[in-house]
Image: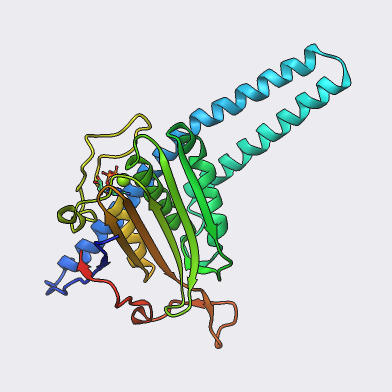
Length: 290
Ligand SMILES: Nc1ncnc2c1ncn2[C@@H]1O[C@H](COP(=O)(O)OP(=O)(O)OP(=O)(O)O)[C@@H](O)[C@H]1O
Ligand SMILES: [Mg+2]
């Protein structure tokens, strides 16, 4: 992987006129609105993806219920009930996951188990990944909890997974690696694909709003707005984290997000703090402002 880049944000302060919101305040308010719109888009896409799956599960339940009613013998009924139970359990998991996102249950930063978050995201994308013949290789280590807004990080992960899938139109492999970087005390999540890669001249633009090389949404209704990575960057920055990309044309792309470990403070047991931002700087990579 030959073209590393780190994204870092800096905002310039501007003068305030009396009675008027300052430009900085206006930008903050617009960013807030954009974030809300992106959340709704992510939710809409999710509902689109999962409605098909939900319908399949309902069909399974209906068919096995009919089978159980038609055949009175115990083994057939046992099989029918078992199938109904497992399809219903999967359906319940999916609805819980969507409801969780809709409720935005963790607007607060809280210690977050990244392994669970990965499993939740994969559950929602499983059908899509199978359809596009994308295999997921999970390399999950035991890591401390990250300090995160779970739903937002799930949104980031789903954006990265969708981009990876779209970079491999004839299928491929995604490596999902969860590690703890002791040097920076961060929980690191890498999403690596073996797809098209990103040319160096485009690499600097991929986080820009509306930058997209896709003609439009694909058959799943995803891609083409150019806001996916912008949202990822904004979310990771709000977490005091880092997002980094390494890519080689023809070989693939790896996105890594680094999130602060949730640490308990001495003065307020059970509460968590964000480590200072310089504690998670990564000096080995070239830095690009966005
Ligand atoms: N894993 C990847 N492999 C190759 N190119 C990528 C990858 N991830 C992102 N890109 C490039 O970065 C661009 C911007 O990505 P981004 O997710 O912001 O927008 P998008 O996928 O085009 O549309 P959407 O906002 O609907 O997701 C993509 O159009 C693509 O050119
Ligand atoms: Mg995208």
